[in-house]
Image 1 (spheres, one colour):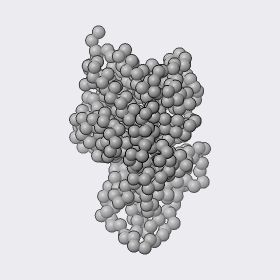
Image 2 (cartoon, rainbow, N blue to C red):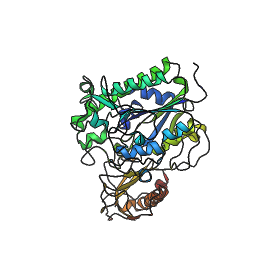
Image 3 (cartoon, rainbow, N blue to C red):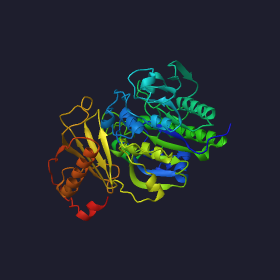
Length: 452
């Protein structure tokens, strides 16, 4: 058979809870990610990449639909994605692609996942909650007939092997493959980060990001295993790319690497994410393949919600009007585009929170009388955090309420209100934080405010 080369294959390589600064291109000195770093250098590196919701299921609902979590209805874990909600699988199938899902789903009500809860994917080798159906060396997923399948090897390798088998068996017609790992997410029943045997010892005590060095949390206990998991993921990425190369498919396959959210190691609340801080929301993202090779570094701020329209656009599939994200392809083509100056973040479970992040500022609010598990949004918020990321990139000094930042805060407050309404939320009331003066704090000029 001859291969259909008119349309590119598309693969999403999704990790879970991976910080952006685990990668070499973002300054990590441990050489954990040579394959990702090569993707970033030779393809397109989305330098400022952020989740739109630092919780597993909400982020995944956005990545499947191109909509914010309050629009998908999956504003927290445990809410299934509506059967009526169209996903990337539906759009690619309508365009003549074969579709496959391998790994962690986290968007269904039942386990095993019934066919009508699989988001339209045809080939299925997955578990709804992979952290509960499997362990590091005990990978159990379910096939199309909902039969349990035990895959051999460390979990990252087991899922990668399954993906490579799928690629080899479907190499003659275009496919959309979504490969979703649990790593480097913690293993829930152990509250631990189980790296492959021998990997944790390589990285324990080696290098600690400045925010974790300052705030501690569980990093001394967990960082070695976490880094070991990241290393194994990058090795798996290399094996996947080698498989494509050996089959003569690499030049006609788009590969997106990203993560659903980051990890702050119990420094910002009692667990690992669910906060507005970059440690929770900033993720590594790079793309290779047709339209992305030699794309360079995208310096605009890009949200997870922008990636679904980007993939459709790159494959020549019309972007549906209901998608709230924007394709980055115009940025790569040099087309004039009115790209937003900030990313918008919704936060649930730990709080009902909202935030915006510009290149210079981080500003967040919280609904003090709402329950993050019971309430998706609020009409009333109060200011919680303000960070100057130029002076304080690791968000160690909260400036909210300082008189010298009143103009900055007022400006960001209005920008956040606008982004909330654009996402489909009701116009909120945001109560300013109680004002306080600080000795020696200078007033920020309006010129500095204009620095995005």
